Length: 476
Ligand code: NAP
Image (cartoon, protein in one colour):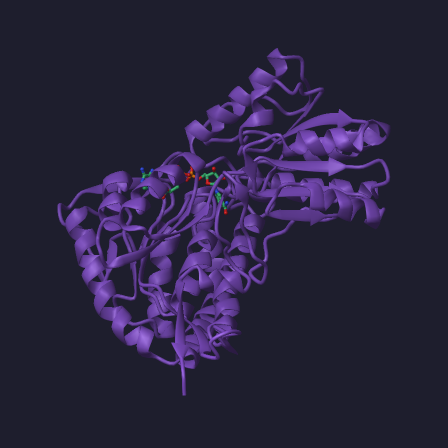
């Protein structure tokens, strides 16, 4: 593996105390790289580098920043297979998912190249005093970016691209399971024209103390986190000490509702995508599938046939649809959700058995008659298990869908647009997929309500997360 050291100020470094940790291939359980582990002294070096680099970067014109981001998109797009392969090696996901992620990740550079030149301000008259109100957006400051293992490339670029577009410098703390893709992106960014120190990457085995240290450095002004709600809460507490700007993309518990008037082919296709994209290891994964009783049997038969036909195996094999889960804990948690649901009366239609042998595999699984009391109805499954329940009443299913502390995404399938839009509006979610199993798009504001997070990534909103609004009251 080529890039396994810390990336600070455009240089590869071994880390202050020389400690390293192994990254495993989830399909074989074998180590694929030994990666440097950052300590406090490394974080300080990265902060110094970011501070120095940001001065010049923030002073560049939006067009100059835009051109660098555009180049990053071009370079990454030309190397999608390389990044997809790395993603599969360290995360396990199948080649098709990995290529999809690499493409999605690269698109954030293109989108924010286009947004960099659109930090619109405003000039208006104060109604009473007659003063002019000038509103403009300025780079907020150094941003600490903490990312999860489920999208090793995209969860990083979704933050790096808008931060750079806004004029900020960043320090990325990738997940310990999957630091290799983010490290491999650094030479590409340098080639695109990102100056040394503007983007620094600190893999570590000491995430808590390292991130906490950075969030208490007065030069840091933004913390952008994607990961579990539990860790997000901790970072919000830490961010309070310096009143940092927080952007939090946290957990989900997505309901997917199939009404009796849905086009079942569209609903099955959408459910496959919403459940099995990234083998269910996605905050957007359909966690609870509610199907109207009138179509439940037909939907379940068609959906289960599709799930049973998926080929499970090492994601580097191009014929494989579903790779392994990222680690043993995740696999065991998924198996425990199934055992719990079955013990409460659920039926296994497909899958449900941990296979023998190496690798953290779990088969695509369909459960029916899942009771409301089952753990998988309340917690993120984060694996290839579809938990199907039925309903008869629209008000009842909306209430059940909203009965969670999460509010990231919901999915609705119905051909009656009046009804469908009325239901969408009553769902307490930041995003809704209507007759679609995929909502993620760099051009759209991604994010949740309630305990799924704060702020939005992508769209026009994404860059504003890294900017401060300044208002000048002027007379002339
Ligand atoms: P996680 O355990 O919260 O870890 C996420 C990141 O936080 C990792 O880099 C981790 O480092 C770091 N971290 C852990 N403890 C920390 C601490 N005390 N202080 C600072 N950083 C800390 O989440 P995960 O298991 O990797 O990812 C799965 C979760 O992410 C799910 O809940 C999923 O829904 C959520 N997610 C949300 C979105 C969204 O956009 N809303 C997108 C993707 C995933 P280590 O790797 O070293 O532990």
